[in-house]
Image (cartoon, rainbow, N blue to C red):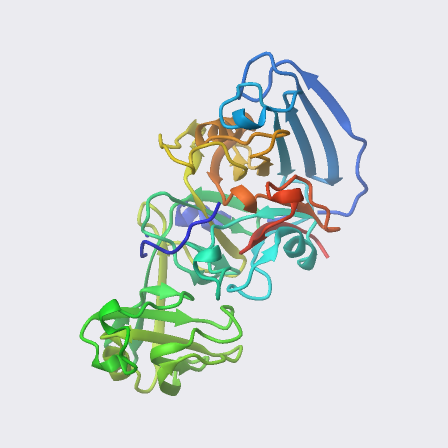
Length: 427
């Protein structure tokens, strides 16, 4: 389940929350498995369903729980309606007070590519992890991993949060293993240090759109229709998107290295660039003299500044499930709200971090509606939780490459995704 494109432009806790957002994973051996059987458990399906829970300690402070609710396979034509399940839920619980390591997000070699969750977990040296953000997927086959919404990596804003109110963000402070949820917003501009003139940014690391009225113009400076202004960083891909328009490459100080009337170039690790299309090409050429300052600001939903500092990571979901202990997911209809595989992330009131997957679209696990997903999140003790990318993207993996859940693709094959949330043991 992915979102096809960034259809909205630009908009968690407070600055104080982020200010206090300190550690904790050892490589201790797994503890014995503990099996529980209960008549009542998760608040989904009929109340008389048998539910089993199997706990496995992966390391000190890190537990993997497998919940199976219901015993009989679902009829294939009743997956979306049956009250008998079954449901298979895998829950990774991290207690920052005792775990020895850090939680973070990872997108792999670059933003534009996609990788399997198991590969992202393994390559980052993590103990375990789950898939995370929505991404462009098939809507942009050249850059399928491009996040649809917030992308924050070690304090660098690599993808802008959307103004779409359905976007829900999860922000991680890897230095303290504190996690908060909510909805961030942003502003961005490039400013000439000598003249003070500035140009607002439309996107970060996202291919600019050429206005339809000027699509056939090889020289975009002749276009009279506004286009896009986009900042690119070396994290995006091997090269920036090619095409008609203007591109200005900047060095680490923000000073202009080169200007081109076409787009597409390789950036060194110390360089960034700004691309423009349509009428904005003229404004960018006029601005790009001497040195420019890129100004990025992020705030929470109450307008308070979120400092972009080392160790801060952020991913994008769709819909907050619980907030302050209450279910807040809105009513809705359509395939997104129907039963699907789901990935959940959030925190308990006591500060434990929970990452969970719910298998779906299978006779062995039918998946959950948005309402059912929120009910599961609350039952797992999540005081604040969001719905991450799901459907064929839903995956949980261990550091040895083992896929814990059963993805919904044919044969249980993993879908390559844009990024993942992982827990990395202390080295």
